[in-house]
Image (cartoon, rainbow, N blue to C red):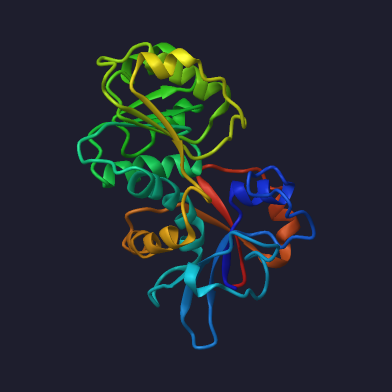
Length: 282
């Protein structure tokens, strides 16, 4: 093993709060993906989404059906920090739905690591307008790729700029999503225009109250994107394109490298949406 990202899902899985955690329990080797080098010297990116044996170890057994060989010049730290952040929205927009060039996207939770990348992914895949909604006004102002921004909870602004949105990428769920959905549904320029709401996370809570009228008064479609709704085959098939884009510099999450032997300190560090902690053996 060379590098493994300490993603929010890794923490949730270790704590038993992720929806895939049921029945897994402890002991558990954390880590859902990573970069390693095989005996022949090849670099691999792999996913380790099931079972007790993850990527945060000195050695790992990988399933080559969920792994891809990386270019020899790829940076293991950059791949480990960035790929998981990018592929979430990439899969949502290419596999769970088919975003058409020129459509408008709103990212709810845009100042988190995956949300920041979702803004760039939507633009790269052809979105016309990308609205970024997040908690931190300063980070929103510095967010590349966003054509408009709003602070989470500012329902008046969200209602106004969300009137012509086609797709919402929701990393929050919970009360912020409920407020944003209610504001947007009540202010649709054309109620018959499809609004597709794609849930990718639950950083604000696992439950949301959805008024029945929201589903009847507008053309609203709600679905999720993640492990289960996407097969391992589907996810693996998209890794080469995402990895190539990272190697070419299209996407970059700054890694915060911590040696694997210092994992206890790494685990206690506060999350930083501008960086991603990467445990490594380089």
